[in-house]
Length: 428
Ligand code: ACO
Image 1: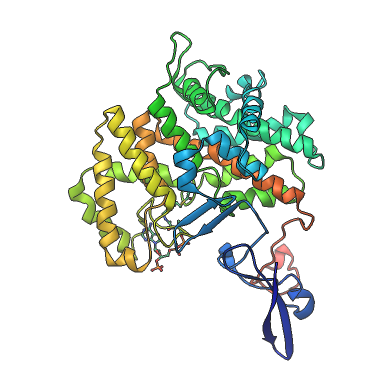
Image 2: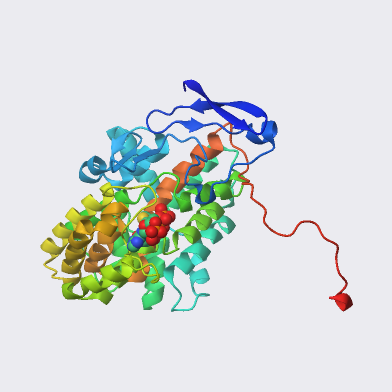
């Protein structure tokens, strides 16, 4: 990392701060010694200008609309790779050889079963529980079942925990769905692919054979790839922050799931589809565009805008293409897709969206595909969590292996009362 200096003057103090350069992307000013030397903190709510860590996993150029995993463009991975290969890439840094991929695939496959007692755990939830509520609970509970992979100082245990999480997430997600519809849980079938197995556990029933549709399997695998990792987003930062205290990986991923649930993050694809359904027909689009532009109306066009992308989200391009293919091949004609396409065109021409650089994000089309496959909207964020688990565990491993890693402890700009004396109850 080449070092330059940034000059800063604060009162009568002149300071030189190191400037660090990554492989690509903006330089960062290293302010680690700022407080020690000046007694001042920096203020950056929402971390809009702050790099919280060093990472070699994922790179985003939001202005250009570029997303790279370990250097590989997301569209190339989505078109040519598989979710298992991308998971290996994220965890290990390089694309696997054929033998490495086979070994990884077989390791993951052999960890897909859940501890049998966990099935009883599900029965504690109400049938109408949101599957994300179940995910938070069950994934957090894994640390009570897999004690032999919670020692975070042991790299082998860390890898076992990572493999377990990637492998068990489809089983946990499918069981959350089965529980909500009152159908029996299905055990994993190790003759199927990662994605095929998930589809069977979700949509199959014990009374009949389930044949995995290759079109759906391929689309689902692409959706998983598109959601695998995304730099230091809110849920990933949550996983890192939780992990920075030394918390076990299952607890950290449960924290990530909780954060992902929010409508401004992973919950947006559910919200986007609900919005498209509410709009219903293309003639109502102008009314919703007007609401999104109205400062006094809290309504936002869901699936539009992104903290980092100020251009078309590269994942949204692949998603739109996949939506076309899936709907075509499944012979589904969904008016919601017409609404989505027209809404996108109108918004992309509208001055409000153009000037604020608001483009469709990954969530805009994913709901259309997931709904065509047969998932209820409540499962959308669950699928996101399933895929993002690979990124979370890779980021968590990277953090724990970083010798500079410290417990995350942001500071604050205090605006409450200054010190004052306690007033006894009778005198208030
Ligand atoms: N519809 C209408 N106006 C919008 C939208 C939107 N979807 N998104 C942003 N704006 C406007 C804001 O009102 C604001 O206007 P102002 O400058 O006049 O006040 C301006 O654009 C900037 O918006 P911010 O909220 O400051 O941008 P921020 O980077 O904090 O927000 C976010 C990003 C949360 C994603 C936002 O665009 C949003 O709420 N989008 C809808 C939800 C969504 O699709 N989330 C998915 C994100 S992708 C993911 O998590 C995988």
